[in-house]
Image (cartoon, rainbow, N blue to C red; front, side, top):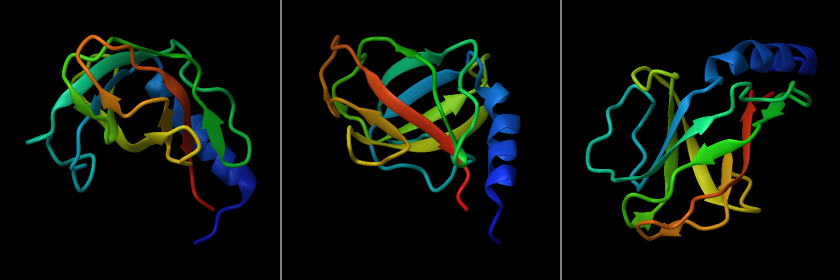
Length: 131
């Protein structure tokens, strides 16, 4: 199935408000098979919160996140992926790939190898629907 750009933007704009004030957690690999699979052997490196208005309006089938406020790393390790929970921190919304700036992953950070207490900076985060 191929969606029109207008439809892709509409889907992203419909989904985006679910991420308002959502809880973000970054983990070590391996990434679970899907967002319904529980975290098991992965270590949570850090946690944060999406902005009250999590995403800008969609364009080109994707929306850029507004500021994501992250806590300093609570564990040492390499960030491999990110899971987002609703604002209560209970219900899983989705999982995303994490990579370095320029990697074209869903979430781009300046460092993957973290030590306890180091700041974690989300340089960019895109919510999109493939064409």
